[in-house]
Length: 140
Ligand code: UDP
Image (cartoon, rainbow, N blue to C red):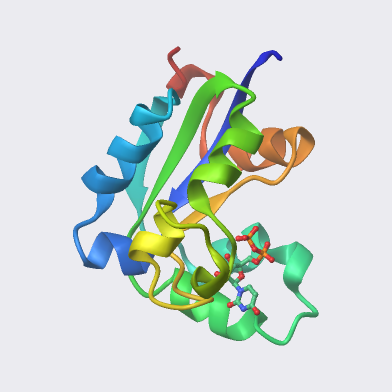
């Protein structure tokens, strides 16, 4: 297994409830290193572009308005098998189906306001990291 980078977003439901530190503690306890991090508020155009793959899905409009409803924390996580490891730590999209101890089981409000985003594959991770970060901002 190689050292990988993955893109994480702490979503507006979690920043609103001041959960950034508790979520970051879960990443660090699992051996992922936060090698870049910034808090920002997405515009509607940025949220639509980030989630363009879901444009035709019924939840797209709601997702964009949720993701622009407050600040997010965009992060690059580094570690062995980081993409898959982060997906494990996050838990299933629907918190009702997420395993105990995962971020979504513990913190998510519902299937939309589910506290975190994580890239689902190495190629999408590279695209999503470059959406938020310049190479110079990532320090291992
Ligand atoms: N989402 C939603 N309703 C759904 C499915 C997804 O609101 O029925 C939202 C949710 O915030 C999810 C995001 O859209 O995290 C992206 O969906 P995806 O299927 O890619 O799930 P993820 O990779 O985030 O687990």
